[in-house]
Image 1: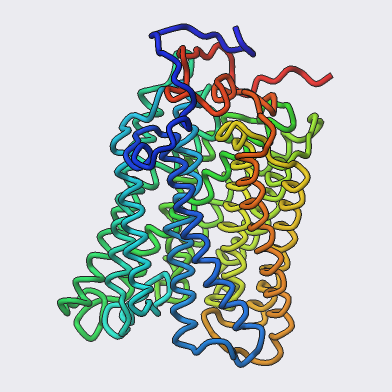
Image 2: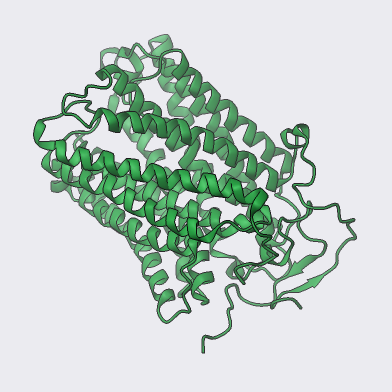
Length: 540
């Protein structure tokens, strides 16, 4: 028995070193090892994130002055479209599921690999192809519709490369579907002996709920993009009123996918935070079953609230009131998680290591984003702040302040397992603090801008808004430093960091019972779960 886990040998496997032993390019490009595919996703999303960050930096520099002196309006439109498309579909959605999920799901359930290893590799290739197609749209002139592609402008009147960009997103959608199917099958069928549903780690519960959304919602987006291309290429009236179409149909289909997509980004982050809060407070997560069921509730209720994006689009008062009530309802399981995390921390033996700093930052930023979401669910207030910077601030607090912070926390937590090396803790803590300060300085002034009436997607604005935009641009500069620092010291640690050992955090879980980095087949013997997860000894 090792740290409360019993192990049994099921087959003899000759030890061949870690999954990082073979460094040949071909061995990486044709691998079916879930751990390597997770790293391939990591390299790829960093690439797309970097391009999206450059576009965001150009926008913030342009907004330093009220007249928007850096770029023309047309270029600005293409910048925020590129930023939105790359951040949503090529960073935020795949980051935690495809990177940390790919690496950790088999390790957490005591399996050798995912259920469909070749399908897993195919999903990465589809993701790369979709991203390159989207970037090709940039190289040939860009797209100016915004990441929402609202019709009829996108389907008829825009003279930019809408179909190419839509094709890139369409292809990447298949990557999401395959990843979701793989996780569902793996969690259902490949759990080690003793892992019942209520002995699953909360990170796995969150990924399972995310996978349900990926499989059910992504086909709706695929169909929508096909209809958009059909109207644009063949002139068939689907969305354009001049051709007999209905532009509200586009909004219904788009937001039926895109609001659950918010939870594709956030739910995995919630799972990461559950792991971090438990590990660094040395306590079982308070209300484990409530947190687990809250993940499923968020996934299901997320399909019922798309109409709150359309309060000013002409839907009936009764529909708007219904969607408003449902939007308040979906906040309940999110609040359950926040309350349970804070209760877990109460009287815990808390260690403020780098991952825990990110977890605490996530709780604060997500709570701020969630509470401002209630403003947008209220009919009267939403009419006032719709399509203003208030909305920009809200969803960045949720999707960037929340998800990216959780991703960074998870990456730092499992980095010693991924590489077998420790990073410099001082710089890790410093980067977490800088990121938190920079994020709030960037986006909190945008709440004020939105309330005062500054519309989003404008490259110029009245003079009275300049001070808030200067603060926001200054914050973006600080935030950029916070994002750049981990890239530097994590790469440095791969060669120069101290050896981590199997369990540097003294955490619970199967992944901490194997070597760091893990061997190719994860476990020489399949472990057996004999106790509940997070069963830390009582705090004296």
